[in-house]
Length: 117
Length: 109
Image 1 (cartoon, helix red, strand yellow):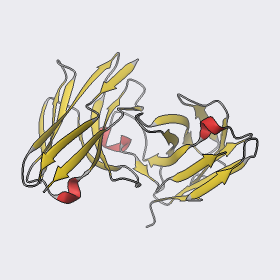
Image 2 (cartoon, each protein chain N blue to C red; image 1 turned 135 degrees about the vertical axis):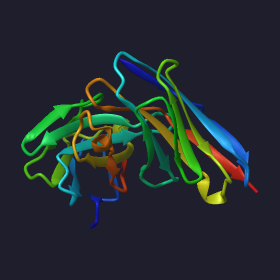
Image 3 (spheres, rainbow over the protein chains, first blue to last red; image 1 turned 60 degrees about the vertical axis):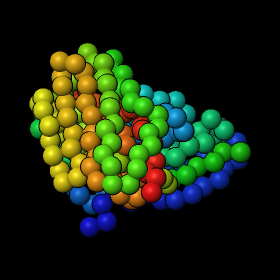
């Protein structure tokens, strides 16, 4: 099993350009998440999905859009990139999110390092 | 809301023991997770605590006191490969993980 994979690994954009980050998981997990990680700050949730066809906003959703057309894939889009979106982006998945604490364990992809000039 | 605090950086010696503390403030709490993150890599799961007490997993142990809003990760017999950031995350009332900024652990020979 590959677990959680992300493409691309690195990307440089110019301000105003758009791009899509792809996340895929082969663990049949219901929940998927997009985070950004910046120096000195914790992982911040951008958007998440509780199942195919559903998405919800996290802590820092502005400037990003997501789609979950298939259970195994979760796409993160930047419509008009800004330098403030320079960050490392992590996708994660979990079996579910609920009272069975073990099911909340999140599995992470290797990350995408994005620079916006 | 929820707030997770942990030290920014710690230094320890190879072969020694180190304790990384995490305090949390939350209006709802369902568990406490610890992850390890090597530089340039993804976070990987270490342990979780739901009830008070100590959970041991080999050289790593995690402790929780819900009444004090406090947890720690204990690493024994430190090895150079333990040099990494350790992330504390609280599971809030909506079963979302709220992450601390991480503690960078530097191991010296």
